[in-house]
Length: 263
Image (spheres, rainbow, N blue to C red):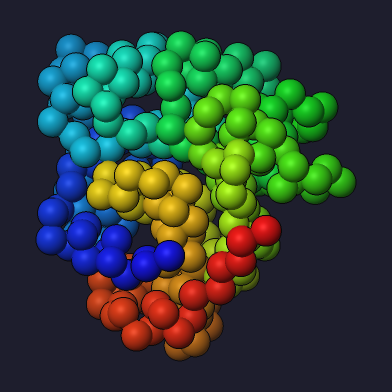
């Protein structure tokens, strides 16, 4: 897995990454795409979604601040992306917290082909049909076999499933990766989960093996977090340094620090 090659492709090709995303974290999602070298677009109006999605290299959907109308806009974008063979990343943010959220996540998954479904353990378990509850947008502890859930859901929906946590899991149903990069400070900042979804979307814009794209994005983001934490003691300075590291990180650093296992 040549993660830095994907980063070089992003920096060279500057892909347009269209978002219909969480209003709480939208600014950070735009910034993280920009520092990677991509071009973020956040067009939510249904009147222009068809046109904007058509010029994008990938589409990121995030139901963190969903409304019924907003999800209808997401459906238009998803159908347009499918028509144009543009990869879709869906962050099932908060799935398991309410019936509305579960229902809308299911609708998005059933009404179009989602290439990468991403969430924390309880969110993905909820989408997979397990009886779990999510506490807001934070993961609830489960005793489930997450590798099995990721693999089974990926096979069922013919997609890639990414589960974030202490160790991230990525599966396309055939190959499964365990990503051990990251830092505990990520859990003390609102929006890092949404940001990494945008990183996955940016990687998927240039890497057509979506399992590699998702695993590589999670490792790359995790490595940046490790480096940022070396000189940042508090969440605010950590966040600033995280953006800086994502901007200047080099191949040698990525290759030395990558901690990804195939399981």
